[in-house]
Amino acid sequence: MEKRETFSSRLGFVLISAGCAIGLGNVWRFPYITGKYGGAAFVLLYLLFLIILGLPVMVMELAVGRSSQRSIALSFQRLEPKGTKWHWYSYVGFAGNYLLMMFYTVIAGWLLYYFVEMLRGSFTGLDAEGVAGIFGGLLSQPVTMTVYMTIVIAIGMLVCAQGLRNGVERVNKVMMLCLLALMVVLAVNSVLLPGAGEGLAFYLKPNFRNLVYDGEGNWILGEAVFAAMGQAFFTLSLGIGAIAIFGSYIGKEHRLAGEALRIGVLDTCVAFVAGLIIFPACSAFGVSTGEGPALVFVTLPNIFNAMPMGRLWGGLFFLFLSFAALSTVIAVFENIISFTMDRWGLSRKKAVLINLIGIFLLSMPCVLGSNLWSGFTILGMDVSGIEDFLVSQNILPLGSLVYLLFCTSKKGWGWNRFLAEANTGDGLAFPKAVRFYVSYILPLIVLFIFVMGYWNQFGS
Image (cartoon, rainbow, N blue to C red; front, top):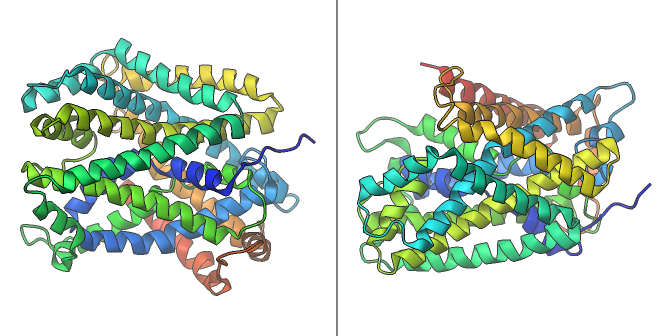
């Protein structure tokens, strides 16, 4: 059997695994829901759920990957008891990776476009309506969107074609370190803006009344708890094997709870510092944190327009966002390519070529869904909305549930085998005392998140 590639360093493993988890949700969703549900008090609630929800599932994904030494294509087959069908999920997980990239590459293309346009000065002198018009204009141009989407796919596949160490690890190390440096520079600039103090206090000084009641006195604690659960759960990209693949590339020198904690801390730091960039800036210029794409593509360009040297700061911000998006793209591409290699025995270069074509073709509906196919909807959702819903509200929670049950059930890999793998090596041990919690309570919480996702989408 061909010797499996491994990371050249522990730092490389942590950075690329964190790069997979770190994405646009850290930048536009985390600040938005933090602003909506109480600021600093919400951050504390989020951190609690990250520890009790996200990290246990991450340890299980890493354990399955490291023990099997294979991607999601064959990991369940290698570990499952004879005659069981856990491996059927591998195709669902693979589909989840593809679905994620079908809209994520398009959004990453938007960020590259904004980086270029910000440096060109296209936003200079525009009012709020003019800035919003640039975003609307981009969505109406399928050729421009296709060009930038193609650039993203080409960069990701070119990196993956070089192999794990020479391509994925080396490029992600540089990109993640640049991303972290850019964040620090942008955060310092925002914090020093005149009028930033109010936003900074809201973000850093807990006021638990803001967590319980909104500005109009309405009780929102239940919504806030679910929002914190969802953000803590979805931020780590669990359930589709995108974390397990990097577990398959590491040795057994270190226990996996410590590795998962490092990845979670880095992911959280990026989200936290994104808040340090956005809240003080929004406070300084008296604007709302906005929601979703509007925050990044409409609200923040208006702020950069009003800043001294705003063209420079805007360019750096969209460069940082591009790095965040590309780190996720490269990490998920590696999982897709590894699946193809493991399942069908293809060489890396053949797997890259096949998936490059496949992802390009399957990303086109998302491009066209904003313009030529804008009238196409299913249950009120456009093309990108459908793809996002299938991944975020279906495959991620159900996939995480599969990993949970596989690692704790006697009919799966089993608790003892999982615990032995997770606690092999030096470092922080996964506690035996949480067996009842992860076997019975955590699966119910994941099911609750799954059901509530449907309620939020289709409920009254």
